[in-house]
Image (cartoon, rainbow, N blue to C red; front, side):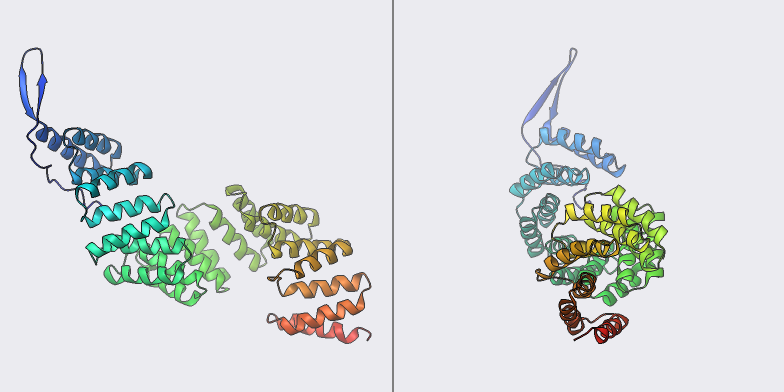
Length: 389
């Protein structure tokens, strides 16, 4: 967005600069030089040569420091270069010169948002909208900030406003879909993504989000198709590989799952989810030592995650370390967010150490709370019927 890139010259200035050569004294207006460098900056920006544009606009400001258009353009170019603190400075100076410029309030908001100062950024975006009620970019900024703040309903509302003004806006569609996804409204997210996919069929971020949404809807084959398309479109990050791993795992393609969880770990070894997925995969492959190593890495990164501890308990159960399994599962049960399957594994762990009464209690607790696969409930019911009273 380059609204500030106009050919409007800086305002007239009375100060005269004198350039003296060995043969001639030329009287040159500082405003003329400001206009010259301003227009050279515009021309460089049109060629996407931001370094030259920045240099030209800085030279323009040497001759006319109180021109708000030049400061806006310079701030915008610095945003594009990801020099967010420097961009913030330019937008603040532009607003000192022209406090009612909605675009400069947007620019200040954007530079603050990219520095993680989301509350301040929201205020700048809101000020921009107060000045220009239909300014798409500032609604988009509010949608982005609220999504980052976990205010998903607000993000939905702001993104919806963006799409009312600009129905094909890619960022607006992505934020609205992501907000639906985070709210657990997978059907709405899926429908939103399908509605714009024809316009952005090769957009990797859209394909990644479509893969995540279809995975959440248990459409694993569709998820793999979308995620591999995102990868082919050039997106090769932690998240793409993670969800290819998850989808492959769900389809019992464990060799593929291992491969992509490994790639996900390679891209970002500080995220526990890929390590956890790798551990689950190795459990399915009965590669117990590797499973324990993967879960241990996950546990270092997320020591309070009960799902990780549950995975380790399953390894203990399958490798004859029954007391370790009992200790781990009892500890998980002390947590308010203990997974429902915990009682199922705890019942089996108690049986293996001969604690029949405790096993019965665990299994009965499992049946009273389990809302998942009925086959598991039927198995537990049969186990209970076989236990002595």
